[in-house]
Image (cartoon, rainbow, N blue to C red; front, side):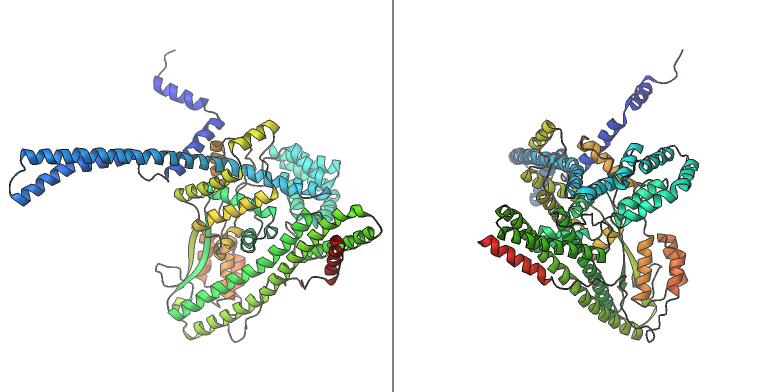
Length: 639
């Protein structure tokens, strides 16, 4: 049969059809790595060579001829031409040689940069898996099973058998686990009618099991309940971040104390770094005022006071999480559960109970040693070290919550100053401005992102550290291949990686700024659950970029928070035009905005009061019995 398709098109279509998804991933990833590397090399070396040849050749001769003609009023002689031509040739040769030498050495530097970029892109997902393994490894018993189940349930593409396994780990009930696995099978084929039948039939049996375990593992039970209802994690919405993880990493750096940082914080920092390298853009919404300088200064002071107060509130909870995580990792608490999703009062109760139990065990070990059981000395030494660090962390918790009151009082003073000035100098600029222009009170939009040059610089810094620490190097991968295992790092190394990530990102995205931390905490992280250790750097780069593009930007809650601050802190009325703008531009809920319009803005009737979402827990000072147990232990260990 006669074919009407040209041979070239047939070959092209055949080649396209033969491309597997893996090949396309490799190609897209290679293009991504090549583009980032190209940001380091500003101008191609061939262009630089042509510039030198053009400048040293025709341009020099024309300039010499024109200058001689203007200076002497006649054309150059043959001797002059020989001089200029010789000068041009010699200059050009030396210029070309110098440029070639420069680009030869630069080429090696660019090659090293490209290798570091590939190493970082390949190693970060493996570090993520290794850190999650360390998190599970730090737990014991049922807590280990529940944390592993939660990690399984976060995978969007988890198989029905995987869902059943996670349910079995959580509920320890084979029948209920089998039922939830069946619901997952029906969900995958879209049979929601059967899901509804099973949910209605077995709800009364399974819901009490969820209720019993919710206080112990709230996030895991929430994920399992969603599976029971026939829902799976949606990659478009990402994964909720562990709040204030950046603050804890900063605290560990400032205090030179890794105990203030948790392994969950390491996981979040690795995810954030891979997101930004993959092209993630995190939006930031904030207020800005431009107008009368007194109002502008008062506005800036109030914004800074509000930001510092939020950081102070977050610091207390961060220290409390660090204390609980440390006690859990050292198996010092009988309530060895993950701290994710726990309230501050529950974390404090767990901490106090764990340290009480630890001090009681130390007292018992001291008495055992007095009765001649010398083999208890090493255990006593270890427990005394844990108690010493726990008391230090508890002191940091107490200090952090004390600073909340001071920062709150400062915020109230700044709010009163703003109110007084805005009442006396009130005009159209103290309302929320929506039209064109720059003056007045406006919402400012910005983004947290890395351009290609910043990505290359971050990868260079992280790659250099990984080489020194022997993480993801060729020798390390040979060792993994021999043992058939994934990347293996220790707790100290993992925490050091988080510190290096912070130091590499700080010059480009200013992670230390409260507004940046608030924006990152309010955004969901990309779901990198499909990344596997055996994928190449190019495949991981392509998949990371695709997963980041899947994330949908939801600014509705951020816009509602801005509207709340506008009414409650700045005493500015939320006008109908502003409400319509927030709904149209950011998707804010009409009911929430309407509720805010009913807030009384009269300054004389509504004094400044505390609007804490919840009162901070009463931490107090470390208990005396802890100190007594520590003193007894040290006395016997020094003998």
